[in-house]
Image (tube, rainbow, N blue to C red; front, top):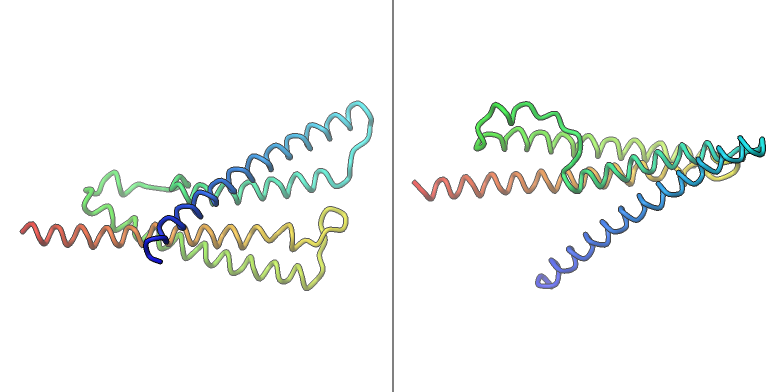
Length: 174
């Protein structure tokens, strides 16, 4: 079982990456088509669909959150990184560990509270896009923040493991 797990995990990672990228392309294409179509309908036919503007706003939300998950996956997210320029490399790992732990915990908190929001939306039977249950549209919030928390936690754990490995090799060399 342990021999197969790295292959399975790598395959799941590739499928997840492909799903994220495909959903980003699909959502961006849909958003562009809807926006251009709405403009054409309004200019040339004095007509437009009432739900299109709201759908475009929801698509922007989905794109932003899925892209955030992809950025966390590739460690390409926004970061204020002043200390790494002034701290020697052997000490730069400590601030990274703190930052990754903080990011993981904040994303976990956001996932929890966005899950509470989705539950309230379900309880109050909110709707979007004329008559679609709002919880369907907002389910991306807890899922994306949970995935980001997971990715930041993995980075945090990797930094901690690397710290202990470097400490062991440093102790062995003496």
